[in-house]
Figure 1 (spheres, rainbow, N blue to C red):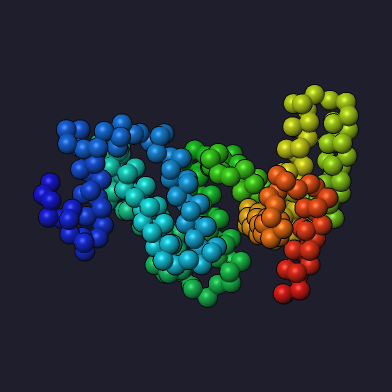
Figure 2: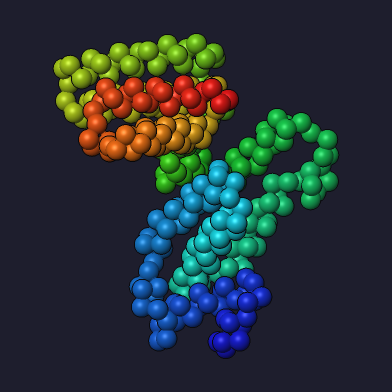
Amino acid sequence: MGDALIHDPNGGLPRLRAIMARLRDPKTGCPWDIEQDFDSIAPYTIEEAYEVADAIARKDWDELEGELGDLLLQTVYHAQMGAEAGHFDFDSIANRISDKMVARHPHVFGDENRDKSADQQTADWEKIKAAERASKAQGRTLDGVAIGLPALTRAVKLQKRAARVGFDWPDIAFVIDKLREEAAELVEARESRSEAEIAEEFGDMLFVMANLGRHLKLDPEEVLRAANAKFTRRFEGVEDALAAMGKTPAESDLAEMDALWDRVKVAEKAKR
């Protein structure tokens, strides 16, 4: 493969694919890239997706451009390995997702009426996906919910699937009652059970919390990310206050840091 395309700053996607092919060339490529396989690259793919989400959350559009490029590279990487193994290639991947989008939007690309509510479109989408799962012999309700999803996200998806067939609390009050029940069982487990049983009860409580978020129409991953960001922001405020006093957190104590935390919290709320 010639170098002209690889060094063309306007080469676009063909350039990126050529670069990946060169990196994976058994004779002239990069030893590290040649050694990789689907399993070793998968964690990087997940990481890049999170970094895209992070750039969006921070509204850093310049960085988002770069992170989307990193994520695109992951697709190109997997496509190259798939082509080498004879499983698929970049074009077949693109054709497959194109076919899926056309099939799932008959109201846009077919003869169905576009005059539908968002709820009706969602219901139709789910019917189409259910038919797709059936064609893959995924007949069980929970089949096809990816195991590799973040645990909270997967919990919500599992609950939504179960809810479609009527396995769901009819009212949020029942979810809150269940949360109280699980909290009590966790307290009991701490007092008299093994570490494994404590972990199980804690997992049950997290699962109910995800269900509560679903009933509140909140994304648990999203709200937890926001809580993480708030904690980071406020703790850094504590660090700044300590630094102004010539101290570090290690040189402080809980009482002092807690008081500074409250001060940061009040100041933050006053700015709203």
